[in-house]
Length: 593
Image 1 (tube, rainbow, N blue to C red):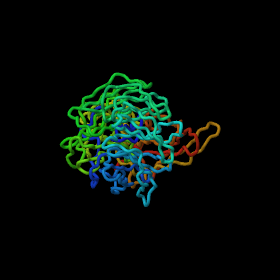
Image 2: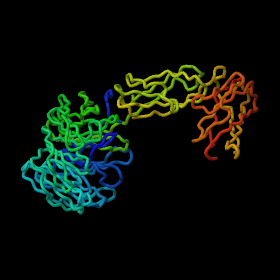
Image 3: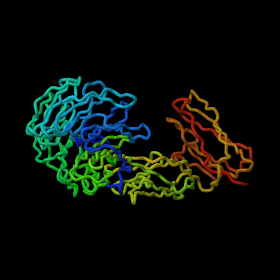
Image 4: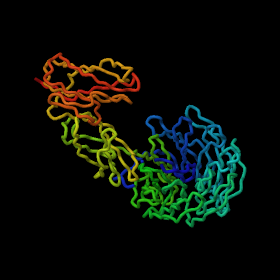
């Protein structure tokens, strides 16, 4: 899985760690859900504000902060609690972040506005609704001079209390505010000659947070001071610290003017040559973030492209620091967005399915749009579930969900399995499907599954199992529901260490069953090994030794009259008496004469 640094970052240019290149036919996400009555929504941050263990959304809009609380059922849906906070007249929100600033277990909010930066300490919740204390001023700014901010533990000498770094245009610098762990802050040494766009991550692997500020990297010293070590030469408002390439080192990434630029990290605070991907007409970027949306182990890039209409564009990562140039593109807001409007993109796994979801704050539409990712999936079908030895069974795996209108179509493969044994090499997908002819050479009960394999070789989804019963040629393929199978008590021989169990088979129907009858025993407990019989032939039917997924079998020659029985004994080794439970399966034999 790719490693990423996660921080509450204004304009959400941080990446979140998730692991499910190549292409979906259309959709990575379920249909967009819009939450309205949020006038001038610009930015958002995601955290559990009411302590119900579900991520919620705080939205900055105008001079207010709105809270969208997540429902427990269904997950990934929200209730707008309205404007719970005010930043004051003229203080329009331009950045927002969250974190527990005073160590009381409640999420607090930090808000950068046109005239200052304020923070609100969480007071817990009343009837599930979060409450906050009054606005406390972190710093004042002249008109529009405050900008992006990050929250993180930059001062390791004070027990990892959270600190705040704010970009301030006046000094072309980032102001550092050192937290005391109780909700108070003192001014630290500013990071000078620092362009706009902040991201935090450990670029040199020393366990101390560093800063990507504009086009420069500043390594943290552990006491909330920083040293400039690299100038990357690109100007960007949307910076990310994430692992877009192979290896464990964080990379520095920037999105600006229709391109994405990744500087591969060397793990020591230095970087390799830039890798540039053209984003085409996506040159009105108003928000950017990263996450593994297709579960292939490579980080993808999600941007809000302002336009008519504004779109959420996802460029799938190739794991090399480059991205596919044809995005999955979806209308991002209910109303057409104004070009250049600040529509923040925020990412987190909202519904707990292991895949990151996307939140877009829609300035023009006065809404917040939520895109829930659809996890990878694969479904298996078999042309028949009862067959004879050497008879061809067609297996079909469908990757994705046709009902929801999307399929995996490029780069992915499907590996078919019988039990734990792979059935040949992986099969390529065509139109979201893969097929395999399966002709079992031995009788038995086969448990078949299909695994969806990403281009990097990782398994991203596994189908449910299908049971196929295969009989030897000459055994009737008829209903076996009237065969009553009763395992007797298992007796343990202390000398040999072997259990013996007698199994009785009775014809409970009112009609005679024409033999031969073939039996198979499957689903033995863990650690159980059948000693005898290992395989034999009796009458017209047989059971070869080593038949896949079947532990033993027997054929009884001749007919079995109504109410009549036959029996056989199974000897087996098991770790304990509790492990000897197994399920006998009647494979063939009921005839209506």
